[in-house]
Amino acid sequence: MSLPRFLVSLVIVGAALGGCAKPPSQHSIVSQPVQATAPFITNSILPASAPISQQPMPERIFSSAHLGGRTLAVGSTADIILRPGEVVLTFDDGPRPGKTNEILATLDDFGVKATFLMLGSAAQAHPRLAQQVALSGHTVGSHTFDHVDLGTLDRQGALDEIARGEHAVAQALSGAGQTPSPFFRFPYLSQTGFLRTNLMQGSVVILDVDIDSKDYYKDTPEAVAQRTLARLDARGSGVILFHDIHQRTVEMLPMFLAELEQRGYTVVRLVPKDSGVFGRDVITADLPDLRGTL
Ligand SMILES: [Zn+2]
Image (tube, rainbow, N blue to C red; front, top):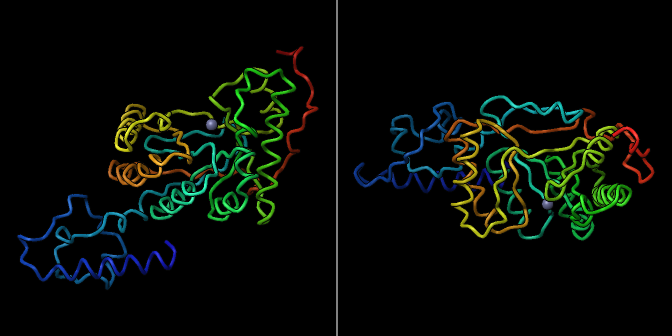
């Protein structure tokens, strides 16, 4: 939690404590389980005599310490193995002003890190926002330049589109001394065996999707959250697909993360095995044609 947010939290705590002078029957009882180990409770901010269960505390204050899970260093697609109860948050198609920055703030509130698969065209249009994502400690990968269905292109055309996207994201981040990670996601999840094999031989980490939130449907934020949670509960863990270009996703995320925490999940942070530095050549359009081997 950044200092300004922490201070804001203290103000909220102070306001909440002010209400403690009222009779207990007038308290709004927080229904969420309160973590007795939270430093906000065990230290001097709350009076020891106050019953913890009756503190009308904003939910977010409790949320930052418990949802953040382990960091998983990934060198290949096969390294992404999650344990039960673990999720990976991914956001595609950004960055987009007014949306991505709101999502960053929410992720920060909950103390979790995500992976952003950026379009080259969007990163090129909003390089500062792309840099803000990387500088906030999130993992940045690519998602082609222009969100083309690669299944509709010939092999060379598809590789060119992927390379163009990756170069544009790298270019955008370079302004802040940052580099993208070698994570890639196929637009529309549309892939071919040729492309998949070719990319993996070039050390690209293809980020598959276990749970599609379908946040591009015109549903309410609540419906998106409930649908995604239901799929996650059925599966037990997984890589979740969101898009940081929709207002409903912005609005859905706080309630979704609060509920994730409530249900005992943790958010795994994906990082490249080589500490964010390319340990490989950037994809080039003249990769060997594997046609004869597939
Ligand atoms: Zn996409």
